[in-house]
Length: 451
Ligand code: GLN
Image 1: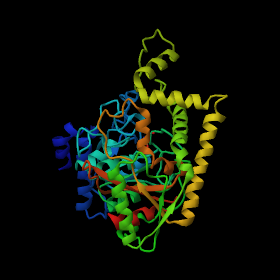
Image 2: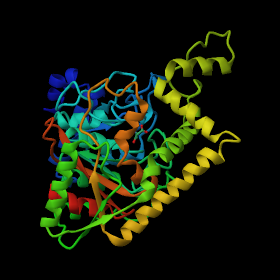
Image 3: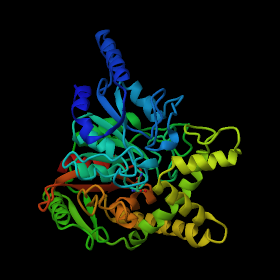
């Protein structure tokens, strides 16, 4: 049924970069056979899933939305891919994304944009717009994303779906193409809070292959999602997450969500986190710096595309021609920004200052969580914008992640869930719930209570 749905609507939505029809049917049949043989299966066995095209999938193309990986077939599975397969999930295919996860609209994909199923002339958010759109258009039952500065939560908000960025280190990064290693985190995308929790439980957990993986039990997310409640919970509302630049309908729906939390028995506490104003600037130095180092591996020798290798050119020239042809404008912009920020003489002024700001953001969160159990905010300042509207204005695009980026800088966990439609445009608004590191279960307890 899901393959038929993809066939019927994905020409318009363009959520998928690759559909693995035969592989999906084979996996589904294998689950059926196990069930017929009386084998005990997990709760998600046989459920069709879409995966952001940033996870290595053995024998299935993995492009990261970039021409530079054209023709590369991963010889191995990412840890997340392996865990999903072991749990019996059926991989339908790989979803569209901003190239190397750099973007907030999926327009930076080398393979064309994805439409928002609510209005195909608008963006589904990014970088994981394909995964979110596949859920909102009922092409997949569950999806996987990655979140470096908002790429799971922001698309969830713009498409009326649920997206979770787990605690940094909660989900293995092994086999997940690196953008900014100290910020990147894989996580679940779904249409309900409980669905997201079931997927979270399967994909999370310690992995010796990832040196930053947390060696601790996965927080009890499914139990929390089944027992939604906010009675007696202290909920923080941060002043810096609102005001100028926020769409009126977003502010209104957020205020209603806070009122609902109060009615359900939560204690609302107003807070100020003054360093959050520095988060966006710090992120746009740290993420490009790390990306400039991570993307050095795309040298035309190891993976995918190779341009100009006709026997007359040096290796350096081939690398250069390949990068020129294979990387898109936003990726080039970030590599240049990153190498500049890291270069001798500028390192302390840019990268060093950004790291200090990052510490201040983490301290603001630590102080907030001394007073409250969770923090809530709108996920994004606006609803889905029109395709093309912000492509020539990187700053306007970067502002889409104003409320999500501080969470990545601090390594905390956060969830976005729908909280109604904005009256002025009828488009979905997202509510963000933020919890301290390794308290991911709180996200689900709150999410399930207000869903
Ligand atoms: N939009 C942000 C960026 O372009 C975040 C992307 C992400 O989370 N991968 O960097």
